[in-house]
Amino acid sequence: MANLIAILAGVLCLFMGVVVISAKNPMHAVIALVANFVGLGVLFLLLHAEFLAVIEVIVYAGAVMVLFLFVVALLMAGTRAPQESRGKNLPGQVPLALAVTGVFAALVVFALAVRTVLVAPPPSTTDFGSITNFGRALFTTYLLPFELTALVLLAAVIGVVFLARER
Amino acid sequence: MALTVGIDIGKALLVIIFLQAAFGYLTLIERKLLGRFQLRPGPNRAGPFGLLQPLADGVKLLFKEEIIPAGVDRFVFLIAPMLSLLGALMAFAVIPFGSPVHIFGRLVPLQIAGPSLSLLYVFAVASLGVYGIVLGGWSSQNKYGLLGGLRSSAQIISYELAMGLSVIGVLLAAGSADLNQIVSAQTREWFVFPQIVGFIVYFICAIAETNRAPFDLPEAEQELVAGYHTEYTGMKFAMFFMAEYINMITVSALATTLFLGGWHGPAILPSYLWFLIKVAIFLFVFVWLRATLPRLRYDRLMAFGWKVLLPVALLNAIGTAAWVALVHP
Amino acid sequence: MLTLYLPIVIYFTISLLVCFGIMGASRVIGRPKRQQSVAKLQPYESGIVPEVQLGPKFSIKFYLVAMLFLIFDVEAVSFYPWAVLMRQLRLYGLAEMGLFILVLGIGYAYVWKRGGFQWDR
Image 1 (cartoon, each protein chain N blue to C red):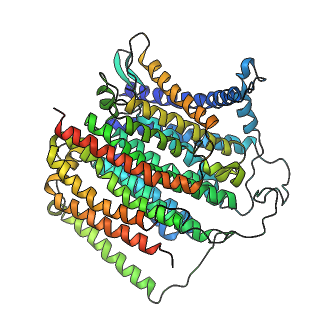
Image 2 (image 1 turned 90 degrees about the vertical axis):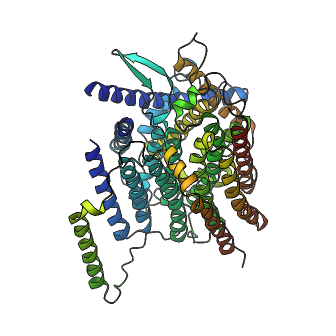
């Protein structure tokens, strides 16, 4: 059962990822990306990372994508028929894309070949990613990065206000 | 295994049918109550006391001509009402609506699913609910629709923050994000008493999240016709409507679970009836507020969320945390 | 743990079927009987024929709210594990979250001061 759901979620993620980059209409790309994040949440859940799964949906699907949606909705407002823009290819775009895909495919094959070394053993306990364990790690072992996050967020807040200032 | 899945399917069907029926009769009760508040009888033609009114409305909406305006993005236009309704239905999935009962000799919890992060699950699903509204408003190529959708999503995300922080006090007091454990932590004392501030902030945010009066800016008739669902007809309009009312039921049910002791109550009534009564009280307050309060101005609404509710919720969380750290055994 | 989520999958499937069922029913029953006129398919803007197209002239505040929401949402999310663990962390937890809130409080005060929460400015 878990395997079936993992395959379904994985296929959903891949398909939506392809839609994100191939959709002509940016709004469709946004919707596909939301679906992609929800699929990723399901995959996290199947890896026993319960808290991360919820965070994935709340922060990425629910907050980051709202911002994307605002930008797309406001920029596209007024275009009666959604633009079907067929931009010209950049010089050397196709060979470069093929090369990068080749490297990536080679990496995947390599990783699969030596997975006994590279892949961490699956978590032994099912509460591995529970909110308690997550919190314990965050507030004891990784306390410094957590506090530094506050500084990063502070910089982001100031940046946002600066961007939106009256000119 | 087969029995477990069978019970799961049965519970899912029961909840969906119940939510649909509750939606229908909630619209009737709301119109009846609004009528009484305004010294008129309300709908009373269809059946005795107008009891068949929801049915008549449903049939009427089903037979309405389906109009898709010219030049809309059909895919987005059609998916938006479905997203709204799906989000509303899914959010209810983890709410425990009664003490466990015996069916076929096994103990079945009255809850569709009880994962340990059930409270955060509700927030995760609720954070997706905004898409139906903003996509519906955007895709209908209508000025009012777009404005309504954007206003509504800006309002929902602003109040979502304060809502998320207002329940921190409950998490602290219960020491768990599992709704079942939160309910059992309230056996002796309901959290509404120690967490009165959190409760008030939560309920105000809940009204704003469901786009109800006095925060019903997205559908401000006088300025925006009907906001994001101006261009929707028939059942597609009904689905947005359904989503709004089911969301009302869900936030009321969550308020009951978090602050009013969930399904706990004296044993003279079964637990699910206690739950129903508490939810009904919240729903009555929703209608009462609609009949009483005028709509807020948009700038005041946003300022209220960011400048009042957010800091109050945060202070409440810190205060409760200090209490847990210093006083709690 | 995963079996706890299985009923949600079942519930989701049924909910999805209900949504498609309603859409399908309204499509079959509500199919327009005759050719629809141009006026009928126009957006409804209080009976006035839409003349001015929607332009990308929207308040920057919408972006501002979305970005601030994103930042403060990341902050709010870190409160949940902290709240659940508070009984173990005690004063230590209070101090570390106090520092976190202090830094973000500076950001909050800055936004307030610059009128970021003021919709009419």
